[in-house]
Amino acid sequence: MNIKLKVCGMCEMINILEVESLQPDYMGFIFYEKSKRFVGRNFSIPNSFSSSIKRVGVFVNEKNDTILKLVSKYNLDFVQLHGDETIEDCKVLKENKVGVIKVFLIDNQFDFNKTKPFQSYSDFYLFDTKSESYGGSGKSFDWNLLKKYDQQIPFFLSGGLSPYTIQNISELNGMNLHAIDVNSGVETAPGLKDIRKIKSIKSILASIY
Image (cartoon, rainbow, N blue to C red; front, side, top):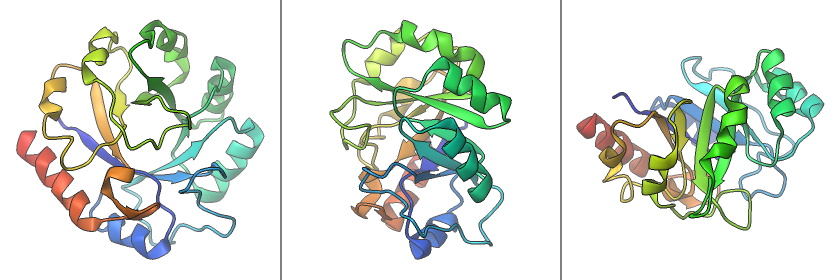
């Protein structure tokens, strides 16, 4: 297995460049104004930003027209839909040649059959911990629940991931795990990532896979 790494919730220019130097596979930028990690009105991505790192824009119940404008402005490779977006929303974005990561918020009662209708219009799924807000809880869900998933679409694993909580990531061997998505678990403050923690996660993944 070659588990990829996504670092999400980036918004500070210097910190973006610091994380970029570690060459994660994906970097996420949150365009949801109510998030503590909202990129802000004057956000920009450095012109020198590596083309090998996929740019992911995170949205919550945003209009497709607005999403497509931001995809064009920031050259986003993927949009991560973290709200109550419909199959039709995903279809529109795919028809505009945008990569789609559809998020599902997981708790003990989650019915994985809800993922099936999105298969035709999603490149990946992302499974995060259900909370009162749209993600960002800093808490993990019970990974054993993923045994109920049919593994048809490769997925990102999210929810409170840190150098401490991924120690047992090999428990997911045999599943269609594409990447881990880290955010609050590698921060010193909301939106500010700890380079040492990201290095530690990369080291752990390298030792396992």
